[in-house]
Every structure is written in C-alpha cells, then in structure tokens.
Image 1 (cartoon, chains in turn green, cyan):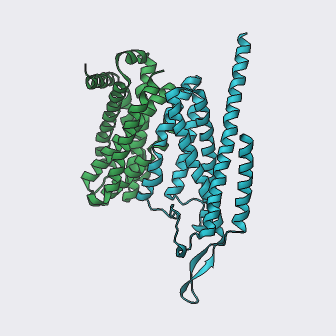
Image 2 (cartoon, helix red, strand yellow):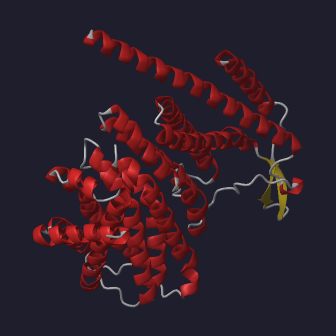
Length: 222
Length: 238
C-alpha cells in the first residue's frame, strides 16, 4: 500500500463510520440550520447590507465548523481505536486522511448552507464565482488549520470549550479575508478587486498545511 | 550575570526616561488654522507615549519569537530547560503585549477620540493576547508533564505562524489609522529628528534589557520550583 493509498483508506474508514452514525454531519448541518433560522428571525424582513450579509454567512460557517470538526480525533480516543490507528498508519497518513475528511464535511456544510441561505436571507445578485471561490478557499483554510488543533484538543483534559478557544484566534485571518471576499462578491466587485483576499486564503492554507504535516507526529506519537 | 542585567536595566531605563522628558525635543505637527487658513506647526507633547508604546510592542514580538524558537528546540531535544524558556518568554510576551495594547488605547483616546476603534492593529494585538491566553489555557488543561510540554510546544509554533498574517497582511485588507510602522527618517515629515531617534533607540535597548533580566529570573524560578517538586516526590517515595 502506498503512502497516499493509506491516507485515502483512513478517509474511507471515516466516511464509512460517518455514514453509519452521522454524528458529525448531524451536528454540523443542524447547528448551521438552527443558527441560520435564529439569524433570519432576528433580522426579520429588513434588507441587509452586503457587509452584514457577508458577516452573518461567515459566522454561521465558522460556528458550524466549530461544532463538527473538533470530533475527528476525540472519537478515536473515546472508541479506543487510537492505538490501532497508530499501529497501522504513519502520522502523516493519519493527518492527511483526517484533513480530507474535515474538508469533505465543510464542503457538505457549504452545499447545504448556501441554498438555505438563499431561501431565508436571499442574496439578490452577486459575483457568484467569487462568492464560491471565497467560500471554498475559506473552507480549505478552516480545515487546514483546525485539524491539528483537533488532534491537540484530543490530548487535553477539558475538551468542550478548548477547541474554540484554541482555534478562534488562529482563524482570524481566514475570517477577515473570507468576509471581505464575500462582501465584495455581493457588491458585484470584479475579480481583480479580491486578489489580495484570494492570495491570503491560499497562502494561509498552504502554510498551515505544511506546518501541520511537520508538527503532527509530535502530537500523535509519544 | 543576573545581577549585571539588573544594573544594566536600571541604568538604561532611568537614563531613557529622563532623556525622554529633557533631551528629546517636543515633536511638532501641522494643524489647520482657521485664522490664517494655512497649516501651522503646533507642539505635540503626546507623542512621548510612542517611546513607551513601540518598544513594548517590539519586546512582545521578540518574546513570542523566542518562545517559538525554543519550542522547536524543545521538540528536537526534549530538554525540560528549553520548555522553561518557552513558558517564561510567552508570559513576558503576554505582559508586554498588554502594555502595548493599553498604551495604544490611551493614545487612541487622545488622538482618535475613543479607546477602541476596531482598528486592525488594535485587533492584531488583542488576537495575540487571545492566542497566548489559549496557550496558557492549554497548558493548564493537560495533567501529564511531558505531554503538556510536547503539545503546548506544537501549539506555540503553530499559532506563531499566524502572526505575520495578522501583522502585515490583514492591515492591507482592512483600513488602518495606525501611524506608519516604519520609522520615518525624513526631517521634514515632522515625525522624528536625530535626538528623538537616539532616545527611541535607547528605549528599545532598555526594554530589551528589562525583558532579558526578567526572563532570566523567571526561568530560574521555574527551574527551582521544578526541582523542589521533584525533591518532595522523591521524599514521599522514600
């Protein structure tokens, strides 16, 4: 089995167990739907400015991600499957598999959220390509930086709030660039206006992924 | 050696504070006059907080960098003494960061009209405080000592990677009111002349000396407290 096949096998295992329990998926989707409903009740029939619209969208994505992504490594510890995983795969394989799984979860979240958002808080017109790219790259950066934090939290005693406490400050650049690119998309800005946001998201995801690959073994192995 | 730091810090700090209020001239800045309908140069004594604000931001950056480098060294060698430096330097960085935030807020109240303006640079410093607050929370959440050192070293390196984004890239996306972070050398810009620059560099030196002095003490305290805990443990076993 090559290195990549091993990582994909871990992804397949996680997808299979997720299809059976649907724990993380339920948490993420329901959390976002509930938040979205609360937000649309709260704002009512007021017309929202692009600034407010973009911020609300990102707050929902952000907390939806917080609700689901912390589970990936905690479940391994709770089920007692951590040791088996350590024996069968190398650290980087485990990391890549878990990262891809988190990325898939966030992708699903985006796919569920955008149509619902469009029904409850409709965006009338936008640069849809830029909106999609911003959301996609934002999700990539979210998954890239929270996977290692999830592994760290699984090692610590208090699990609930710690994940948010540790991820939130790290994710601020993603939040700033994400909100800014979405706002510009809703303002019908041309692509050239959002170059620095896209650059920031790509370079941030690249740096966080590289660092995670380098550091993951120190968290994973004693 | 530690005693030498104490004296170096004391002399440098006293000298720079005295010079800031005597040797350094008062900065001038243009202000629009409604009588002459022209800009006239008026004295700007508030600029002096700059001497205290910028060096504390500089020492915070230095301290977090030291914490990051010593985290890497710890992960390589697994030597407990490296972790003492990481902890001590993170704590000091946190304190100096808070000083930079507070002195910046005082200045912002005076110049921009409010303590908090959601300026990207104010946010950056606040987020740095949150990151290292997270670091201390994580430290207290792991009971096993070796595991605690290993995991927090990883977080310290990982979190540090976001600092360049917060410092240099985010302010490019969001509008900032903050004065240029680069020290201006042009005499006519009215920002700093040679005398002010001399005092400013002296402040940088004395803040750095203060940091090194307290770091030295803090590392030794950590070492002593660890060895006394170990003594107690061995006594209990015996």
